[in-house]
Image (cartoon, rainbow, N blue to C red; front, side, top):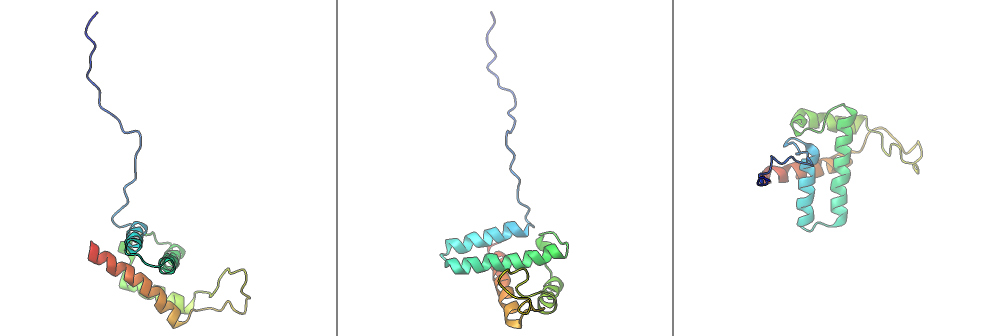
Length: 129
């Protein structure tokens, strides 16, 4: 009987992990969110970040855009502002709000609040990159 060959062949990966793109808006938001959790932000503040990010990506989905940070330009932000002021239906789909309360267009202060949260996110990511 001959000697047993102890050499091992090339190992193959059993699992593959997807690598998040550097341009994925969702991955960048998660990075921002975890930074805020690590800073000790209150639960309500963290919730508002998620909520306002949800509003923003919902708009992107309505317009047929992917969640790519390269698509977020000053013109895109202006379109988002105009849409919120003139086309967005307040309380759209809310089961406890009457149709009379579901008016078209958000108030300027509501739009400003949504933009502040998004702006804070982009500012933090620019600093940490």
